[in-house]
Image 1 (cartoon, rainbow, N blue to C red):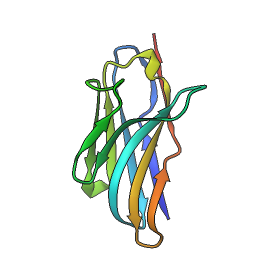
Image 2 (cartoon, rainbow, N blue to C red; image 1 turned 45 degrees about the vertical axis):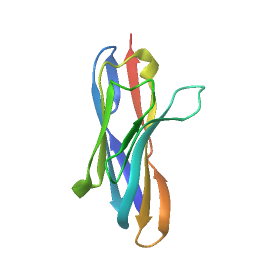
Image 3 (cartoon, rainbow, N blue to C red; image 1 turned 135 degrees about the vertical axis):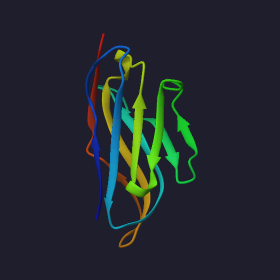
Length: 120
C-alpha cells in the first residue's frame, strides 16, 4: 500500500508564506511525478504545480512567480513553497503522485488534503 502524508497548512496573513510538504511511503518502486492541487469552496480541484522525476516543473498561471515546487528524491518528498500569498489562494491543498508500486503496478495516489487559509 502507498500513502501520501501532507503537512504545513495553516492560517497566514496576505503577503505571508507557507511551505507544504508531502511524503510518499509504502511499496514504491519509482515515482514518475508528484504535484499539488487545490480546491476552494464551491470550485473544482485545480492543478497548482507539478514536478517530474527528471525535475521538470509546471505551474498554474495564477501562482507563477510566487510558488515553487521542489522534491527530495531520497525522501520521496515534494515541497511547495508559497510566497506572497493572497486570499484567493485559500483552499484545501492535495498532494498527488503518479508512481510505480512494487505490488500494484502503476498508481495515482492522493493525500488527505491540508487546509491553507489566507486572511486579508
